[in-house]
Amino acid sequence: MKAANEGARPIAILRWPFAAMLAALAILPFLFTAIPPLTDVPGHLGGFAVQTAHPGDPLLRYFSFHWTLTLNLASDLIVQATHRWIGLFPAVWLMSALTPALTVLGIVAIARQLNPRGANALPWALLFVFNFPFLWGFLNYSFTLALALLAFAGWLALERSPGWRAPLFLAIVPLLLIGHGVAGIVCVGLIVSHAIGETLAGRHPGNLTRLWPPILATVATVVIWKLFGASGTGATHWLAARKGDALAMMLRDQNRILDLASVVAALLVALAGWLWGARLRGGALAAVLFVIVLLVATPSMVSGSDRLDTRLGPLIPMLVFAAQDWSRVDARRRRMVTAAGFALLALRFAVTTASFIGYGERYDRELAALDHVPQGARILNLTRVNCVDAGWRSERLEHLANLATPLRGAWVNAHWSIDGLQLLQVRYRPSADYAQDPSQLVWPARCIDFTQPFASRSRHTLVETIPTLPLDKVDYLWLVGERLPPSKRDPRLRLIWSDDISELYATRPASPVTPAPSNR
Image (cartoon, rainbow, N blue to C red; front, side):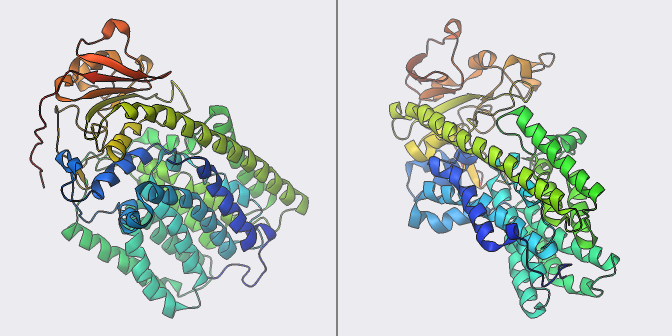
């Protein structure tokens, strides 16, 4: 499936030296933080601490870890392969920092194959590299998707080398699916839809017969997973409201006006390009339509894994602006679109870098609480989070308390533990309600529907949560982003640390640890 302008020299912004510079710049924000300020990263680090614990480690009193085949293993496998050489925290930092860089290279590689002379709107595609799903910390998906984009470009580039392409993709596709099932499906779907689009456009007849390697690899991987692996046991929901939300939230970061305006501006540029003659044709159009259909069809939650459709949203503009051919548009308009895209990209990049610095400083202030916690402690955590109506910018503290596990060998009630999705299991359970994520989350009153009874709600305020806590079975209560009102102090709590937004309390002597038997 050759590019429409095969053999043509790519425009300047698609040449590899410039692409390498853009990829390097995508790493820059991470140079200011030791812990990537992506919401879920502290949670990943906590789980990896258990994964890499040696037999006999005191952590294993509280947690267990059992390898099994799931379609969500990218970060687990990378950490397992690298932590002995570079350390746990550097391994996660490196994976996080490489994700946007590889995404940039994937977008450029696709544009070089599909649109070498007309990708003048490339900077508008790059706006969506630091997208909401990545900033939320969906590491397995985001890292595997970056590899999937490179793989799709590689499939196109190897059109004339079927002897190489078939065995390569028999190996690549299973690795992508094991890294993250949705990202793997995206790669295969882009390959197949592009081939169908090219065939319908009258180009490259017979290419459909060459699709057997990725299709066979997909079927074989899914069959093996179903026979020998594990799938999630949580709820599955298709939520209509999430489909529009997936588009509105694509660039959610620091400022609602800037983020929504950036999405609207990108939409207007794509529309203006179409009016001026910039087109998506053949296989490129089919690939974009595939992602749109996939976003609509994908359940919002699958077996307990949330926001699967939200993750697909940013891929649409990435592909549109990589493949939309502006070569027939007036040169002045092309230059204007490119310049405006880079100006907005520079602004958003500056905001992202500044936010990473600020988040890094906040993480340091909050983690000072652990200076007062001994090794092996049991920490009950409550962390304040906001709904979108209460605040667009996230403090990214939802899983910060999980860092007590790698830093202090501590138990904390904020770990993920869904059978078939996470390989970590929580052994110590001070109560049925406060053992794992999301038991640590508390909400401001404006985010809660108080017409529902307490027991049937998933959201609760700090004040109404305090009386339900199993304080006699833990050593510390760590409030992150919340402070306990003086009138609600429990006599069992003694304040030992605080900063401007958080508090740490010691509890009265707790009962001995009696871990529940592992369910594996």
